[in-house]
Length: 230
Image (cartoon, rainbow, N blue to C red; front, side, top):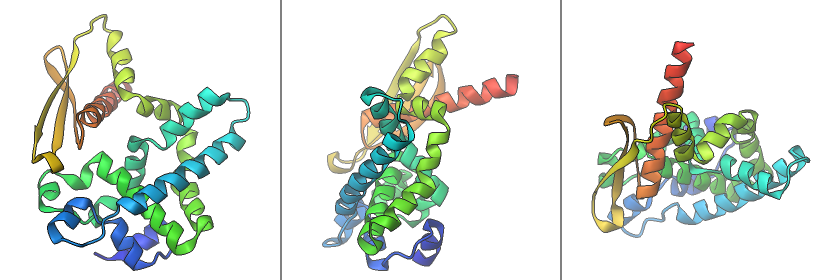
């Protein structure tokens, strides 16, 4: 694991001890024993992300009321938006995962990626202070505000998918969900099924997140088809 490469992508030199902890999933910690995991740094990163984003959109969008500001904030800091940012950075390749997570595609799971980004943000804060953490948010999070349509779609993808399919005049969407693994490390797999056909799929650590991941996949596929048909 070359942490210097990750620091280059982040645009900031982070103390390697903190950064390695930020990349350590609890499944790896559980297998190795007494190895710090990233949950405390994730907690810290989540807090600073919420504060910085809230202040930014308050100043950026003076005409929005509290309810609309909340919708924008929730979309910007959603697990789906953060996972997308983590993919831009290539964070998945640096995660330290247990064998079970490796076997079930943990490096591409949206919740692990989102949690990892928040933990890295927490590490940046502890290593370099609030200005460096704010700069990272400015680099990767604030640009999301330029595409409000995608933000709103990703904030409630199941509703977005339902609305797209309702144009066909039918309501035959359902989610088929399975799971595997022990209770403490379970992975859920969901398929969005419409008229007996799988139109999207996803996996996550909870049934709800897996269904939402499948909805995001389905929305993306449907929009790609629409673009090709134009």
